[in-house]
Length: 386
Image (cartoon, rainbow, N blue to C red; front, side, top):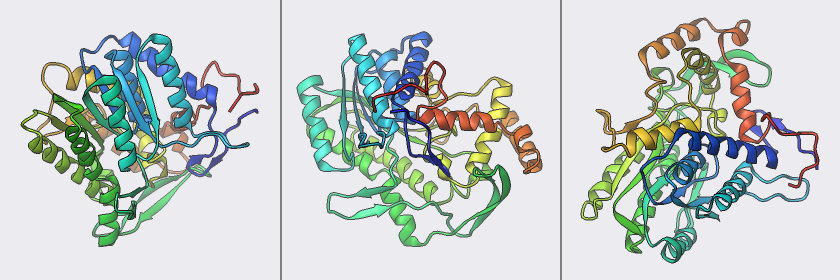
């Protein structure tokens, strides 16, 4: 069938298999050209099919030459409905690894479940023996815990409502958006879904099964951002969950000190993802940030970020930690000159000058690329097998 993008607000309900494959190939080419990383040999990526998780897996396989196991929860195609982009990305990644003679195994299922943990452990035992890097990059709106309780995350502030400029993606206007205050139950539920509890469960399960090596490293991802978005990311429900992830890193490291397994949080740059597209205020911040960083020559996408994380910050002698105890690859975004310029633009941006002052084109380019659209070298009028 001929696959076209069907965009509803901040989500696209179709994905292009050939476009997704090209997108994966493009990231692989970047890593190959960037050079080798003297890193891990056997890598488990939890949340491996899109964004930072996929870029981590590509960096491990094609940068480190590592064997990888990836876990993700994606939908196959059904009738006229295409598969999810992550499904096509994973197929393309496995194909590229097969062609390059690199081991890869992809598990499609709920990473929160005991069953998937057990399945992954069996594969590690059988094929790899032990893993020496575990990447935790799970992004999910809900989580069902082993006792059968389902928790749902909420995007809200804590303490008081937050009103700020917002880009209405449907009609290219700017108006104020207000994010409501979460109650205690919503905060707790968000921490259950997006906090570090499942990360701890994964490491416990791997240690109990003796499939994680002594001196192994595990990394989870976070975002802090500028003061402008603090009420959403740093102090809101997401911020509470991210604080829990950091505390979980300290808990894992302390608990596993006999095996010298160390857990780290990497604070990454703001990028267009399926999650960030849904958050009020953030798309406008992203489009302004993109313009400023591109003009200064310091803009990075997922693959550039993850390659630099592992090449320069994790496997470059000593893990590079900032004063807050976390790794930072948001360093270019948070440069004083970058943020000063972003805020100067922010103060004067409105519906009339939006396209002049912000990189709305770059925002939409990244958005469509996520789903395999608007990628050079793809014939979108051709019939494709979905």
